[in-house]
Image (cartoon, rainbow, N blue to C red; front, side, top):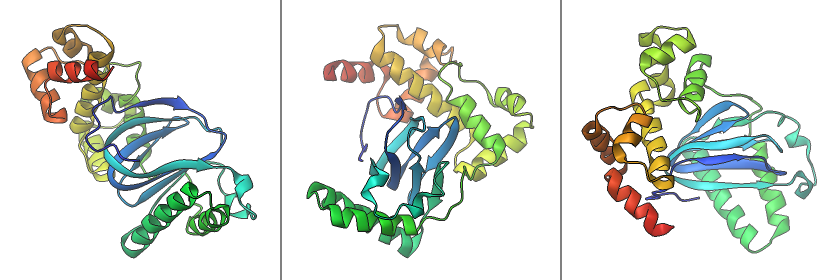
Amino acid sequence: MDTSGYVKPAEAPEARLPLIGFIYVTSGEVLVEVDGTPFLCQVGQMLLIPQQCPFSIRFYRDVTGYAGGFAPSILSDTKPLRFLSEPIHQGFWFDEGAFMGELFKMLAIAYGKRDRIFIEKGLGLLLSRIKPRKGTAFPAAVSRFLELAFNPGQMPGTIADYASKTKISENYLSRLVKKSTGRSVGAWIDIVRIQRAKRLLAETGDPVIDIAAAVGIEDQSYFSRLFKKGTGLTPSAFRKKMQGKS
């Protein structure tokens, strides 16, 4: 998994896998929504997704790492999977994180060689490091904010809008989101706006001023500055680059 410099819209549609899915991040970050619950995976963090559980990629930025899936049948002992009835999000730090990174690297090599024995042993070792803590580490209000913000059927709102919908004050929501994600509410709203604008620029011929309005920005000049700050390209340059790839 390597999205460094990737210019396409930072989203992937909902999917269900007949496999147990995993994501392990070595740099950057990715926001994954699993069955309606958002999980922000950053460096040294892993997400396990149960079989047939609906998930989608809501946002990623220069993320590298490992992503894939495996069938339980590859394991001779499936007891380590007994806790996987819900997504599991876990962080590995310092030496443990370095070990997990090397283990994933070796598993990727073994997969290329079709080395079933190593894959089975490696997955068993990986699963032995998992603590059976389920659910997201986010407070309920932060999960609700991210769920609302990345809802494709809703116009990106203001901090006041999201505070009202999560039934807490703006200041409290701002503190919770910053503490939990390392990014402010306003920064997340800008990410959503840029992400929606990317998709509209890539998939429609609408004028830039209309796309700005569609993501909640009436000032085209401000929208263009915001878009370039977030992507390194002007809206017109992004559209031209996307059309050149089609």
